[in-house]
Structures are given as C-alpha cells and as structure tokens.
Image (spheres, one colour):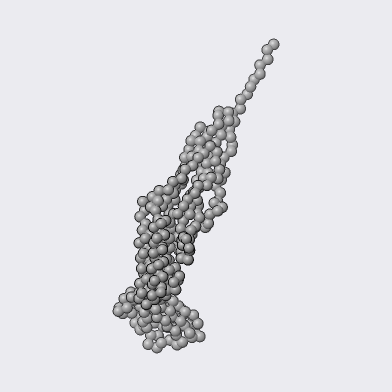
Length: 295
C-alpha cells in the first residue's frame, strides 16, 4: 500500500509597515517674520535656523511600485542656505532631493538698500555723522551677504519611492520615510528698519512725550507727512492715555509733524483744531497741560 504525503502551501504576507511620521528632533521652532539680524556676527552676521523643510513617506504592497513627493518654497524674510536628507525608515525604498527655482521674483538687494537708505537719511538729517558712517558700513556688509547667499533656487522637492518585494509565498511591503532638513537665514525681516535704528541708537524719526506730573492725561494726535500742512487734516486721529511719570513715543514721517491736543479727561469728541505741533526729534516734558492746546 502506497502512502502519499499531502503538502499544504500557505501564502505568507508581510504585515510590517512603515512607522508613523515622527517629529524632527533636531529642528527649531519656525522663526517669526520679525526674525533677528545678528549685526555683531563675525563671519556670517545672519541669524540662521534649522528647519524641517518637508517630510513624506510611501508604502507599496507586493507587486506595487509607488512614488510620493513633497515641496516647500522659502521667501522673505528668509533665504534658503543649505539642505540635508534624513532617512527615518526604509525597506526596499529610495529617495532623492532637489533644489529649484519657484519662479517668484524676490529682490532682497532692493529691500535692504531702501531700508538702510531710510536710516542713513534720518542720521544725515540730524547731523549724526557717526551713525551715518556706521550705517553705510552695515549696509555694504549686509548687501555683500545677500549676494553671497542669494540664489533663485528658493524651493526644495523630496521624492520618495518604494516597491513591494519578496515572492509569491513571502510577499513583503516596501516603504521609504525621509525628510529634508534645511538651514534658512534671516535676511530681510519685516522690522529691519527698527532693528537697524536700535543697533546704532538712531532715534531721529521719533517724538517723545513725557508726563512729569502726578496725574494722567489724554493726548489726541494725528500725523502729517508734510509739516507745512494744517493740523485739522492730520491722520490718523488717535487718542492715548499718558499715565503719570510715563512717556509715549510717536514715530513721525521724516519731513512731517505730529499735532496733539491735550485733555484732562477722555474726550467724547476729540478735535485737532486747537493743537500743539512737534517735528521729528522733539521732546516734550509736561508738568502741566499747555493752555494753548488743551481743553
């Protein structure tokens, strides 16, 4: 009597899969639009930030081949300086990264030049020759760096690919999980003029109102971009409370003025028809409200 062995084939499927996306442990929090310029830096006086540029993954089943991409574009106030690839998990997968131009036209040079020129104009108008010389040196250095690091390649793209593998009795998934980590430099923050002025101690476009009395008062004021124009048309009209022993700083147009009318109490219908006028650089220290421009 013959005996037959019956073999049962069991098709095996791999149940492993790519791990869930994790955070970039070495990256910093996204910088703000008013990022800080490191004016005192020696070699590279630009503040740089390490960021997670983009991250993506792909999982392919047996017999499949899949592709996924992620992209990111960097614009003002940041400049893309460098990038590096990081792999978190891979199984029969691969990746590639590229840097390219988005087509957006961003003229950092023009932004930087215009901002420094404003500060230089303020310094020159008030005879601050030391600040003027320093500003010209800072401007040249800032422009040199913007040219050194500037490129029209402001975007990154990460492509991940994976293919399922194995054979009919041992089917396996393939996956790839990768990211691009980038270094961006703060080159043209939204408050660049304020940062420049603070660094050189330039206050030429400000008017300072100081309340030296023991009681608070209200100042209703408006700005005129032309000091020859009348006060009633000054805009915007704003009312502020100036507390005792405190100061209020108001930024003025370089060739303009501020018109202020003072009130003991919060005015119901404030007006600028009876105002005191102050130009750039003026300082007013008040112990009692001036009668010629108060209620």
